[in-house]
Image (cartoon, rainbow, N blue to C red; front, side, top):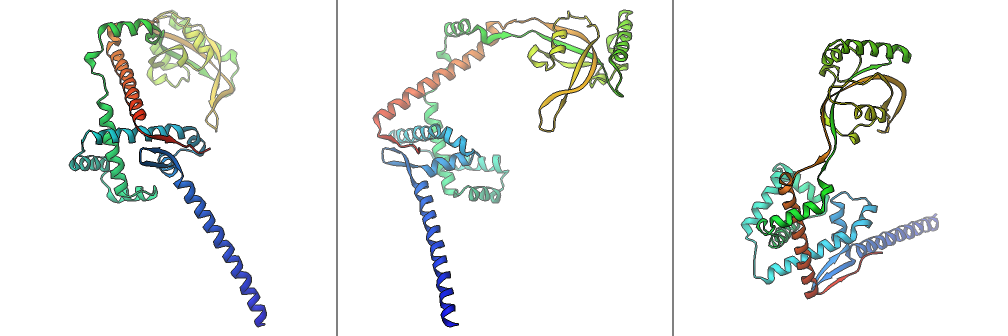
Length: 337
């Protein structure tokens, strides 16, 4: 019996030893993966763990991580170069300012709940010290980029006008209409002829001078019936899903009502998609307002163009500045395959 027990114990020992060896191997492999160097900026190492954690905090899928790894590594390099340039200038961020920003984040993102904040950091494998360090780097990076911004005064009226003339298609306005409707839907499987007869009767009342609003409030099954059939907003062609309604609506003049027409109704499916329901409704449409297509005048879009140009100049200035920093620094990138 003793010999048998020893053999059993021996087998179990071998099993646990093998399992432990496998676990240690897996742990070592994971540590190697996390600590793998993906970039070096001067004497600062950037590991895959840093980049992966940043994307994980944004709930990226594995596919998104692969797609955006380069973007995040380049962003990290830009940040480190900016911080190095900041320090070379002998500048420093006061601790009181970092503390203020720290408390602002705590209030804004966690409603001042420190326990919730600590739980969040714990779930992301970060300490409060690491969070504060990241925050300080973010403040420095934002400050260094802000120094590259172009002042509004540098954007002349000539540049604004040139941009406007070059991008006229950006300032086109679509034709828009405001619609009201009366819709007769199948309730108990009524044939088209019955619904068309009801619609024609309403149309005759309209021709006799009965206001469309009154008719829309008293007839049909439109979801806008309690609003006298009014859709409530100006719409463009691309905003009307149904082809037949779109075609009929934009063929009408202001104040004109359409002839009755049949539309196969749409229905939202369980998966969220919208498809034809197999049922139909008869519509009457009225265009109460109409705005023709055209182009926004320059004065109306001047501030918008100034903001766009400022953003473009700022981005260009930042790229040139970061490019110079990269030339002056030692940067090596080794992305995972």
